Length: 78
Image 1 (cartoon, rainbow, N blue to C red):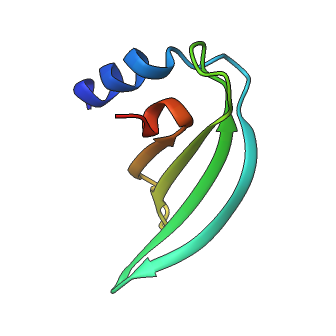
Image 2 (cartoon, rainbow, N blue to C red):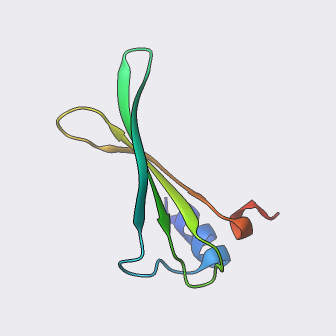
Image 3 (tube, rainbow, N blue to C red):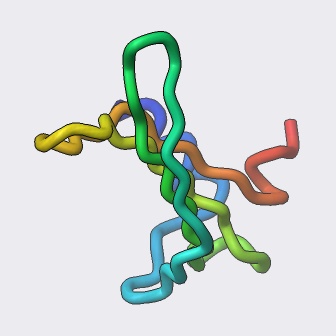
């Protein structure tokens, strides 16, 4: 997790507080596991365009985070 955070910060900087905007949410499943996928647009200090943040939660009472993904032009560069 720490390495992922460092990679994101190194390319797009830090999250701009209160900048996230809800985009959509969908329930999905894989075999017997059920998930809630929520997407946001957010601003980061070193990215000129919105960053798509996708969070995947277990669709149960605990709603634990199963995954978090970031997508932006700078992150897609090699």
